[in-house]
Structures are given as C-alpha cells and as structure tokens.
Image (cartoon, rainbow over all chains, first blue to last red; front, side, top):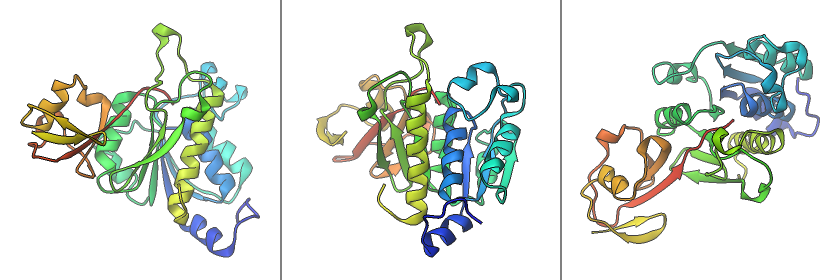
Length: 200
Length: 65
C-alpha cells in the first residue's frame, strides 16, 4: 500500500522496496520522515535517543500531547497515522561511530538529521565513503530561502543547506519551522531522487 | 606547490592536508573534506600528503536540525 496515488508502477515499486535510514528524529528527521512516507517510502530505520520537549514543537513533527514521549515512539505513532502499512524500525539509542554502520546496514540511502556539528561530522566520515548519504548544514534563522541548496560531494554524499548559518544562541540565531522545514523537504526530495535515479 | 582549492589554483607551503587546513585556519572537526573526489573518512592525524594539483574542496558543518 502507498498513500501516494500519483506514482507510476515502477516508482511505487522502487519506493516501497527501499529501506531508508534517518539519523535523528528532531526538526530535520521527523519532517523528513513525514515527507518520505507521504512520497511512498514505507520501510524506514529511524534512530534518536531524545524525548519530546515543549521547545521542539516550534518545528518538529510532534504534538503538545506527545511531550515527554521518546521521539522515536511519538514519530512512529504520527507516521502510522499517515500510512498504517509502514515497516518501521524505530531505535531509541544514541548513534555513534561504533554503531552507525550496523544500524543502517540494510539502508539504500541514509538521511543525516542531527543537530550537533560533532554528530554530523561523525556520520559523514563513517558513511559517506561507502553509502549514499544526504547531510544537512546551515538551516538556522529566518529568510534567505534562496541560499538553501543541494549539491553533490564525492561519490556518495549530497549536502543540503546554506553551509554557514548554524544555531548560535549567543547571537540570537535559532532553528525555526520554515527554514528547517524547507531543508527537511529538500532532504527528503534528495533521498527520493537518489532512489528513483532522477536529478537532484 | 599548487593545489586546486575550492575550484581555484592555490599556492601552498604545506606538505600535507592537515598543514594546508592549518595554513588557512580551517578547523578539521567542523569540515567535510573532499580530496581528489573522495570524502575523507579519517581523523586529522591521518590526513594525506599533498601532491601538485591535488583537488581540495571543503564544506563547513554548522549546528542545527
């Protein structure tokens, strides 16, 4: 089954068969997962160690009555409300250099959706040399929509974002729904393009 | 020697990639580095020796998600 009626048979088969990994279920990961499920992806491996807090609701695909729930559990509930037939492998754990390869071993493509520089750098160094990976850098603040872009690096890596606008509380720069949401949609769009073999 | 950095011919006195990054004040921990078309997997201590016309692209990683 797919909740997307606008796929040709070949697209539908490809998206239903593929396993996609999402590293992190925050602003990027939760919204990327929503877009992938609406697109027709049905097999996902999603890992995050965190729980939903009120400050997440400014941009993340969670609801006020889910505050306190593990993000992977809340996201499981929300994704199944879109498409009940999903095959979800939700892992409540902290991803690190030791477990990341095994965690996403079955995935055709992985979406990096962390928030810290250290975690982003870790997964790029661990996975990009061997597997298609879409990573994000530079999504904080407001405006500058046209600065958000998608580009290839190396054989396997796709980078989304403006490459410079990071979260910087000392200077009042925070992640907000529109820009994080655009990047999460670009992340999902790049994942689907890689799966279907269409231009990024 | 000359290397190609961010698409432009660039003169460097560095003998290896770690030295090249130091020369430009680029923090390895905050970068994705494409070296001759491959994304580097290793840590800063294992960065390669430089040769004439090596191609170096760096992408800045910033926080937020």
